[in-house]
Amino acid sequence: MVRSAFRELVVGVDAKVPLHNGNWVTSINMDNAATTPPFVQALQEIIQFAPMYSSVHRGAGYKSRLSTELYENSRLAIANFVKADLNHDTVIFLRNTTEAINKLSYRLCDDTKKSVILSTCMEHHSNDLPWRNKHHVDYIEIDNDGRLCLDDLVNKLKKYKRSVKLVAVTGASNVTGYVNPIYEIAEIAHQYNAKIFVDGAQLVPHAQIDMKPFNSPRHIDYLAFSGHKMYAPFGTGVLIGPKETFMNGAPEYTGGGTVRTVTHTNVVWDDPPNKEEAGTPNLMGVLSLQAAVKTLSMIGMQNISNYELGLWKNTIDNFKNIPGLQLYSDTNPDKPRIGIISFNLEGIHHTLVADILAGETGIAVRSGCFCAQPYVRELLKISEKKESCIREHRTHSRPLSRPLNRPGMIRVSFGLYNDFDEISVLVQALHHIVNNKERYIQKYMAI
Image (cartoon, rainbow, N blue to C red; front, side):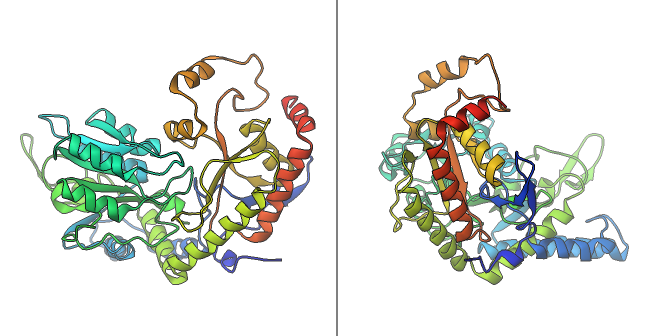
């Protein structure tokens, strides 16, 4: 057996799950791009600290002061992990990346005019929708392989004549696993007086990221990521950016912890990050994230990246031998990427494949459009008009929890605890599905 040396660091990797036939098997989780299981250390630190848990920023007792100290020290640990400069930047704790992007979209809003934001055609909805109702949004195109076109970035920056406020780009795609050249994008954006925001939800757990010194042309101005995708449960996300962005104006959420002085006629807001963290903060979530960062640093992000790329290469090599398997990204191992593979099997709907894998072998994958419908539509070469017609058509029977008339893909996404034995199980299962396609279709349509 070829087991990952990191499995012992992760909770639940050998948990049993039921199959449709009533048997129980060891689960195989290949849906890490959605949520990862927790690190052992993350849970241990929460349990060890729990007897001292108390209010943050509010109490005079020992437990409260300790809670506050640990909470604030976690900002430094997070900043060091991505090499942010706390003399210039602030670390704001939120629930997840989605909330972080919504906050930034609000804080960059100019009441006098709509700012120009350049998003891209490969973004998760969370790095698209929050910008739409507050800013003028345009989209950087992708090439035939689904990679970002830097020439189009330059053309659009020229088109708007230095009026682009922000280039908002994913660090790594949750559909194809492509890693974008964020430092090159930063350098280009800064030449046109624009800043760059990186959605790091997929990149930060799998590769080393360096925000660079703020006076560097390759500096990452804003970065957001989520604990639940990097082995830290309890719902904490991070937004890092210049303090000056958050100094002026009122936060979108107001209340306890955001102010210095309040009268019936006047409010004096606190400095960031406090003014951006209304209410009692999620101390347990923050400590969990800090513990996860500690574990990731101990392993080494380059070691993680190398290992997961090995998993990706092995899977791609095996997938090439499966009849009718269609991949939706290039397979050049020399181009930057993380361990994500999206595919379909000819003649069988992506939803059925995912349900068969779960029900017959205990393998968890994702199917659908992965909250990136415009990008998936481009990769599938489905026009917006055609997809609209597909979605408007309703099937009379609904044998599964999800409709079978929607376009999409199957996604495998690796974590550091996955191993080559699990890939073998996946490959064998896909071969079996292909060889017994008609039988599976009839069986699952009848469920």
